[in-house]
Image 1 (cartoon, rainbow, N blue to C red):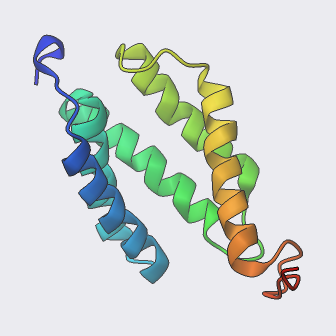
Image 2 (image 1 turned 90 degrees about the vertical axis):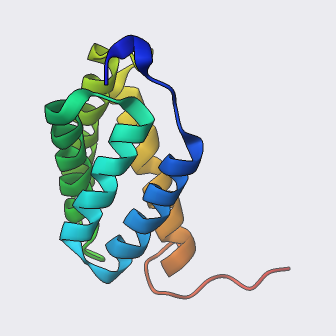
Length: 128
């Protein structure tokens, strides 16, 4: 797809992201890669090689983030920074790749804290 022909497809991105997260929770890494490829393709259109590279960074970031409680947030941020650099270089985003990666992995952390409790015990404070 040529740069000028790109049109963001939110429905295709949403479907791909939903499939990617379902596969992530099942640890179906090939399916995560396929879904990440679709997310990158429909969300950023980086070309066949760029889409694959971007999807690989997203996959690897999710794999290093996945182990609980012994994940590697720094590695996840580095990999997502590489992904965001691809999108910026292609003119798809106008962001600081390092900040975007910090925010992305920060969201993952917030979601995990909600899932497992802030201390990782699986217990949440009673609501008042």
